[in-house]
Length: 274
Ligand code: C2E
Ligand code: MG
Ligand code: MG
Ligand code: MG
Image 1 (cartoon, rainbow, N blue to C red):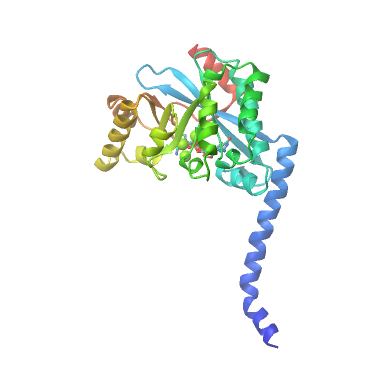
Image 2: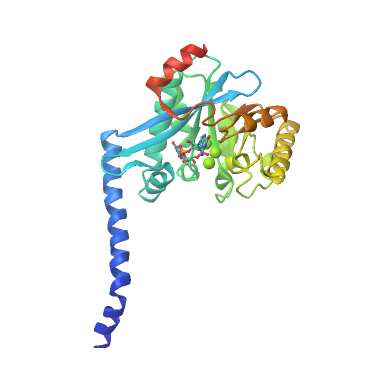
């Protein structure tokens, strides 16, 4: 009886847990199918030189258009891929696609690819990257890998060794979402970054918040003094662009310049710029 009572009490909770779990497992099933069917698409968003307006790089951003749910945010399905053990597969897919695409662009235009911390665990990141480069014929100097500080939190000396190894090939290493993680400045000494990307959280309110401007100015100064390229993400307005440019931020990314787009539409844009 006690058991039944307990079950009775628990039921409403159980039901909603079941629903959430069911939804998640359905999404996992759909995701597995989408990966197999090649339903994931890589979109590309420009990073422009704030002084000249020229496109210098495109960031690869994964898109999954679910048949019923519509676009699923990459944060959601990247997490799914990590949970399901599919992240290496997904990572390889983006790298292969991005490198294959970038060979068609003007030589001065680079391509950036986001890399999940988990891809540093299984020991095949370097070979995946090198394979993508050699299969496509893309020069290593045209590839940038974007990592977040979560990578440096991976235990052991391996992330550092892998990053230095990739850098030794001539691949660029960007520190993404700078300012929102641990922002431990010692990372800037210990790892051979070539770029820092100021997180869009600071850009969003810069016109209203003196504090955001102070942080932005300081990051730009820090990056410049270390000889790194400083980029800002999430630029949506002229005011933001003008401010960042004046402060010496080299690159900008945001809806003001272009949203992420499929490669097919992009090609026109690139050839127009070229
Ligand atoms: P991220 O690497 O920091 O990418 C920048 C995000 O800012 C993208 O969101 C981009 O669409 C968005 N963004 C760019 N300009 C603007 C703007 O002007 N305003 C606003 N509000 N947003 C802007 P997205 O595409 O939804 O991707 C979110 C995150 O998902 C990425 O953040 C990255 O961490 C992750 N992600 C996306 N593609 C991949 C991938 O291929 N591999 C891995 N591991 N992660 C990925
Ligand atoms: Mg990124
Ligand atoms: Mg970012
Ligand atoms: Mg981000």
